Image (tube, rainbow, N blue to C red; front, side):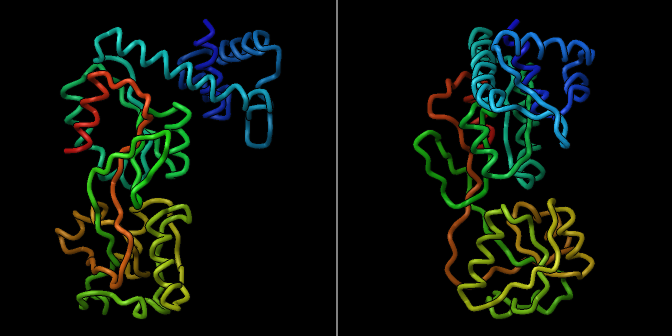
Length: 289
């Protein structure tokens, strides 16, 4: 029963609400409240408290949270191994662009081989994804960055991906072979959120060239950025995998940036001690396709 209570506790923390946790778990709200009360009785501490943002973990709750996630992850690993590795849950943390443009057809292929495996995709920032893999709330992470190295994690490069200055086809920059940083001086930029690794790359190149970036718009999703460029509201900087359809149809134009830049890779990260059941092993193979 303790694992059930811990799963409920983690869901309340994730959703910030007893009501939403009950909906996700298929329980009555009173059952969720009762399970949290029993868990607090078992550990002899208040684990959750109400704030303006909903239910949040207390100091004791924050201390319990990583252990709860680890116990739940170990339970899922054990189930998969005992069942022959073809059942259970594969939890994947992925940055928004990869969740939208890299994962879908690979997951479709994987599901054909493992229909009994439940796939759980958790979009997030690179920092949050790496933290989730380390604390076992995600089995795998998909990131897009320069080569990542960690003593705790395996980082498997899946493919190098070029980055482009993205414009409307009628924009003057669409006619050049390569965009020098100086040409982006005063150009209204439509960029991803501040935590985005390739946004940081562009801003670094501009500042190293003495250019003050003119950030006109910021979007938390790629579709918003691409729509802004289509309406000629500004210029973007995106990886090729996110704009392949628009390039094929001629809706957008992509031009490389001049100068030396660090190479970016789509990378799969997972814990070094992760037991690679057949389902996990084939998931890695599917990501390499």
